[in-house]
Image (cartoon, rainbow, N blue to C red; front, side, top):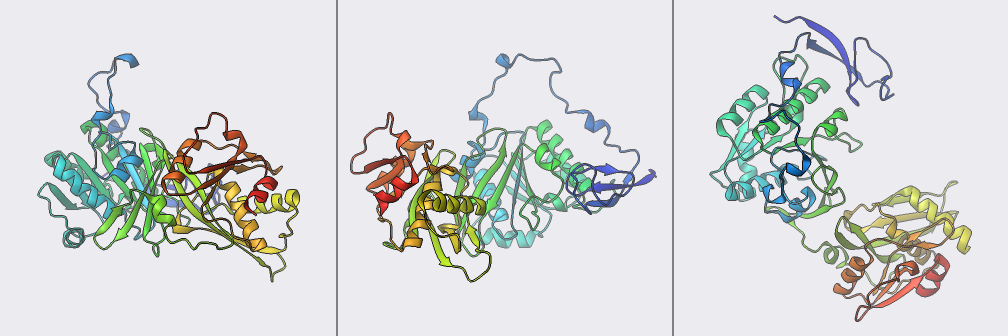
Length: 455
């Protein structure tokens, strides 16, 4: 029997120590080290040395052949968009999201599509029994002979079944439930997560099959486990959305084979997740016209332009310190824009509560919506609505200037396609711009000039 030793592992960064610390010496997080028992001599040491490949000789990068045609298309266009065109053979994808958001539903639908167009697909469920997975499949109307379900938590058993079946794609739901028998730690511990993910990574590269891992998230919304997991895998996806909302957003935060700016939009319906081909039209279709504090902005996520409604409400504060409450945008950005409106334009809203919301449950991070946010706040403060046929875009600087934005032509074309007749945009973007029929283009250089246009 192998000797055992006690060690302390940081749940945040994976730091390993022979003694306990109240504060991790590596990531400086308090109370993050937990005690684990690990064998002194791991039989997997030889496996850690690397992956056996066909040639150990260095190759010229010009002589290496690779093309996007090698990707496995999932036939779910929104998922393929986020992945960069499909699953890359030999890659490992980690997808996280809140409980009940639809991760297992999306992956089961993906497995069904892949099993119909490719060879066998293996769905490993560590949290549900086979009858429970079948009930979910019945709800999604999935009944494929090439889709195999394995309910197992032991990694050694999972590896043997993968070797026997030789599937085209493997899904592991979830990585926190898988364990290696030779490691004494409980499933979900830092050591088990790191070792199981490492073994699956070696398996994916050696057999040249894509493996998708489902990961739990913490109450802060980050993937549970050490950060090293995100460094080990090739792609990290987050499935976002409010459970009370019907819309879900799939976002890439790491992708070695594609852009990290792309998003996929889905709607939760009775029989699973449905793709939304034109999210802009969906997000603005129920907009109330001639309402103060409401404005349409144009944002670009990856290669996709989106039109969304921003709502602002400015109300006298009953508290000693006014509140800035936001949903879908950065609260600190709102505080900055309020300060610019006060200093550069003369609005007296420093003693008011400011509430901002992005309709549809979307989360926007780009600076191109700054001008729309500022005009929505001004509209609510002055109780004057902004023309409902107007789209606003532009970044606002601390001096009140309106700075140019990227992908201006895509934003304008999306606005024209959805029937908007006026766009307020940075004057610096006018150079080389094509004239569009049926839409008035108004360039502004600062926030004061933009307020004069809309009011």
